[in-house]
Length: 369
Ligand code: NAD
Ligand code: AHE
Ligand code: ZN
Figure 1: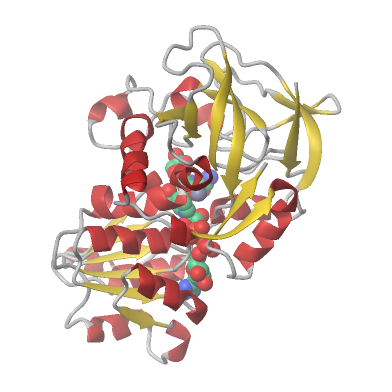
Figure 2: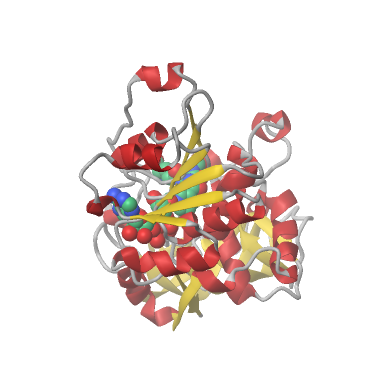
């Protein structure tokens, strides 16, 4: 079938809206009509050419919501008409990872997914007879996309997909990292580096966890009012300080924070986030994605003296079993998605959504097909 899609033909180039061909779903696969998608910083990161797994030409996009149009052979867990959120972290329920009880990472389709292919090693997308790669197993920048069945969370059909699409990445990642990865407890002091959707979702999660102090850190002070609205208590712009920012935060907090979250993807900030943690128990969670060749460093003494470095993917959330519950939480008001949606644009204006993100003027732009 034909599908409207925004194709990334090469690194650093704007996306091009073209009509691509989408092949029917094969065994274990599902054809989904995406109704809404938004742009996450990771899409911009891959488009920049910095992602070691970036392959071109590709259909990017991993934050979306849609409806099942067709199922491939053997698909039993979703049916035509179901409302779904695509998952870049699949959940097969059978692999060593899924059965471990220790992680939300699933190995079933991850290898082919990282190469831009479906599990059988081929692609369902083409343009003018040439193959187009998939992205993160989701490719929500095509109106019609094909995904493995295990990469779909079936959600309440009453839930508004124009909002729920943000649970496909940003909101879930930040809130999940607080509860599942850090396990922030009531009364804790938290530092959040980077106030995009991820950092703001961390703030929302920290408020849910009843953290007593939430320090919001960003170079762009225009991010502070929304962070305040979400529940941050303190605001720091590193460019306004001479000393390393970790020293500023340690001084503010009588020895350091209980938890810090890096929501930028900058390895120098990752070091600051670790080193602003309290001796003996402070934990720093890396959420930001750093480019090819980047490495983190600190004095091992920082870890010897009790600070802990962790990472979090999709907030530690198991998509098929836990995301439907988060959708219910968003419907009942326990999760507030509205503040994250700063713009809504027609899908045709997708490059503007990237520009707004780069300019620091958008948290999330929801694109309407
Ligand atoms: P964003 O661009 O909306 O937000 C980043 C924020 O960081 C901006 O407000 C920017 O002003 C601020 N910033 C940049 N450099 C800074 C610095 N040196 N000091 C302080 N603030 C600085 O991005 P986003 O969509 O919120 O994503 C944030 C990061 O999280 C990205 O790296 C993205 O790839 C990653 N991410 C990871 C996961 C995961 O599962 N691990 C999921 C989603 C996004
Ligand atoms: N492809 C990159 C890594 C990208 C990455 O870390 N992705 C996050 C999700 S970002 C969503 O916005 C993630 O979930 N990682 C775990 C995984 O299995 O990909 C690289 O460095 O190669
Ligand atoms: Zn994302």
